[in-house]
Image (cartoon, rainbow, N blue to C red):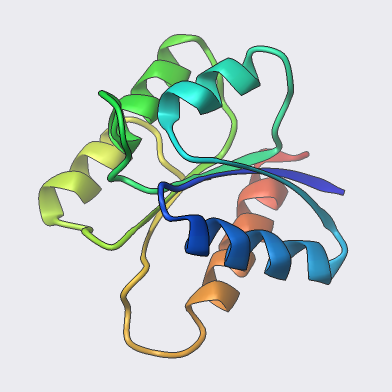
Length: 128
């Protein structure tokens, strides 16, 4: 089972992704709405892969969340799943050790399938 931490302020997105992943049967999913709550949860529980939005409530966006994880020595594969993938955001994400950046608003009906494939690749690449 892949332990996925999914962080997104949109309750609809959290529910859709969690339901899809759990239906596949090879995931356990923890859903949270902020980087701060994710850091707190990660202090007591492990994840095999983290998927996070860029825009989140509170004082921490997805890049700040990633930076904080990396500063703590956490090497968990991190996928930025955002509706606002500006060049600046993408560059900062890769400079800080993101595994992949996926545009939520990409045209095409298979964005969730792309996310799931990327999660599998991240776990495979990390050797979990």
